[in-house]
Length: 348
Image (cartoon, rainbow, N blue to C red; front, side, top):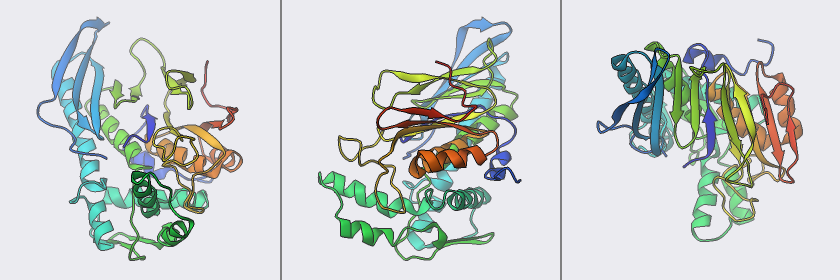
């Protein structure tokens, strides 16, 4: 399910993502198959040529394009990047019954969790704390309630929402180096608000480990690594929440990542009032914002923060963003008003 745009320009290693959330104090389906193609663009940019590889990842066709002067190295780098995304899927997909996340949801307990899953959940819990519970990976039972009601062309009943909310609470998630436990018997986790960003960082790090410093990743959205071979920064259009064919403006990315969460991607009704962004504290979709775009040092941070601040609302979300190092946001209200933090790189 396409939930948001993530656009990334990686700085440093994936490990840097786990250092996030220090507040100035210090569905997917089968991912990549052997039928992927590698093509070389006939045009060259100086000594750099363009190479592309396409596969099925994150529930859609994914194309990675890199600029480099060696075809064999470019091919190996892109194959490694798809493998990195596949590893994330194997661990964290809610749709794969053999993933560690599916095992945790099924059994309520997981022994010997993979270090990546541990770090991701620890990061999610820190954001839950800083967002006062707005970001909550245990939201899955509530999302399932709304989805099943939408399949009947109905809305959940108030009593059903209240009952389901008892299953949702990030504080019921216990994490240790040797095990993860869900303390409510009907609790379930979804990492849809953070794992896509982590996968993007992992793919970029894989490219970078092969010496790739300029790349474009197209998942139906656009991602970037480094700088464009002909320019100093990547210019990315931010989707208008009410005009599908238009951009709000352009974001100039240099060394930061961008993600957008909006009320328009997955809606349960036609008036944008009920959608996939559900507040775990109220059981309903917030009524103030139509979209939030966040730039941050890593794709994972931008991904998770775009969800959190959408749910927190303009005032509280802006305060959280302003406390985060090297992080900015653009807020669009349902009335169309646009507000940005000081250094959000919006051009026109």
